[in-house]
Image 1 (cartoon, one colour):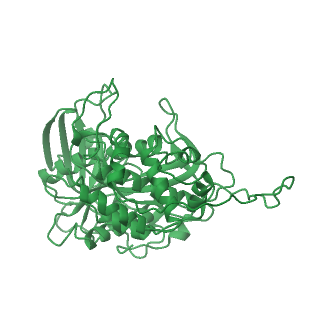
Image 2 (cartoon, one colour):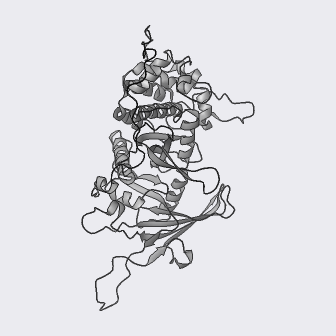
Image 3 (spheres, one colour):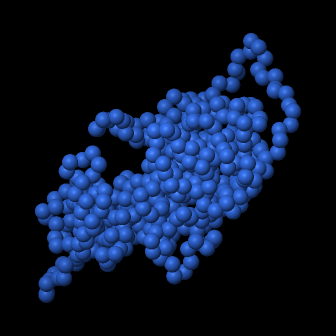
Length: 470
């Protein structure tokens, strides 16, 4: 398993402490309290009685609200850690957005309407909150571990595609700077779920050593290359060929490549693909301010059909678009198998929310929310580095697990026993008295301002024109 040696844990801890430039001791001990607390983290004040947090609850809130974390330095430290790779040595990155819902925080700025799924079919809701875009390295095989590398909060004036393109570009640049990707290595594979404009992302990320794979809606219509023109044809030559309506499989032409793979979980998986498929772009959305002729972004359209899916009697086909044109059988199989690994991010989101308490605090300031987000990601990273070093303290009703197969939650149970063996750079607290606070009987003369929710400016004018360089 990558990154499970004692040296990796001992080297990362001082690096993390060096990224804390204000109230470092309180922030460091707060992260240790998240890792060593009994049970899931329900709120911030519940972490103050932990033995690893030697300061009072006032220092805890002061560190979150007024501390400082050098995020750029912490990003470089995360990029320098050992990363999981596919069987061919390729790095696979997963990108997704997870919301921090704050429906009752009327005075918190920067909130957007976040799409959430309710209980039952068709019960999706739009709830105010802070959406965060995460990038993590995915591991091969069935696992619940990922390696988070970056997190960016989306603001009211941000365009998701533009922010994601810049985020992926920065992550790839940091991986190349630390030597994880050099000239001659296989391209980094970046996987997106539905909701991303993967073809526009391929245009914005042109020139980077990356291959993109994204899920498509089943009602999309793609185009094939232009057919050869008959002799003596008149008129302007067309730019797009025959249509590929994804909702009408009977009208699809003969596929370019077809692969069949036997799997344990899904039965027989059949992937059919059409080469040089591209969408017909229009001047709206992200292309509204594009100068010059709209580009033709060609790739490989993949239709994946499996025998069975958990919870579904008749699985529907999954449509994917791969940014690599002229993809062979190996490229097609690698693309859809990497897409299945993208769902490991859902396990990471559930772990940081339900166990590490990422969305538990009632924080007003978005900057403090960013600070807490990076503390939680750092705690998760320490668990990943120490997962093979911790003891499995399983419940009586749980099945035994090998040390290399512990889940993040079970690895966290034994981290308290491992903590004394890791560097502890935080200094002991100094005696202090609490402040006087607000005088009795005096009301608050500076009430917080009610903040709007959603977009506050025209996103199309804020995005401007974009090109291959982003």
